[in-house]
Image 1 (cartoon, rainbow over the protein chains, first blue to last red):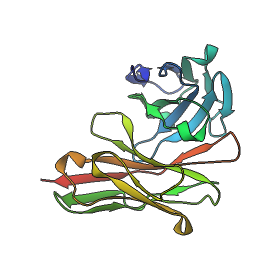
Image 2 (cartoon, chains in turn yellow, purple):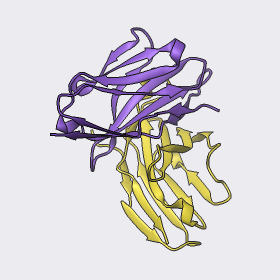
Image 3 (tube, each protein chain N blue to C red):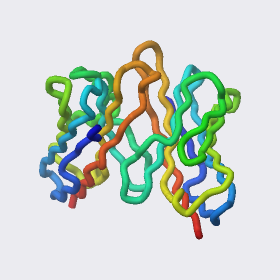
Length: 116
Length: 115
């Protein structure tokens, strides 16, 4: 089966610019996650969707970050305006359902963002 | 707040040496525990998981982990490492009531295996 697709793979922008990342999860997966992974740290959950509803966005900096998952499939994560500290790899993951026995996450390759 | 600690940030071993990577978490309730691995240039992928039952779980490539509830630990082990085990290893914990589980990752341990 096809894996989690993310684009772009790399993005370089200047501070105060805006940027958007796209994720296409594995077909049929109900849950979608966006993580921020800063160099030397573990992935930090930004937002979790179940189908097209938000389950957890407690760590999403809502003044500049936004995310949506239209029709419960693809998702976009946007940063506007970007700051230097947003430089990181943005990972998308999906899992088959909401049952904890199925909460194995499948990760995409990530988007590496550099803010200059 | 939930936290996951991986105390070994960088481990260097010779081939055939034994490996143990520590993982401790802070949540006192029911947890699902995971180890994920990221090989150089590849995606994060699942190594092994614990949901319930036998606290000693076996994963791919000869890895195993033991859940010790009293110690809030889920340490990863391998009796004899290979050069191909060079990677970054992340412990993750999912906890929470009812139908919602909050996921937290540790900071990761970079393992370098010297031939």
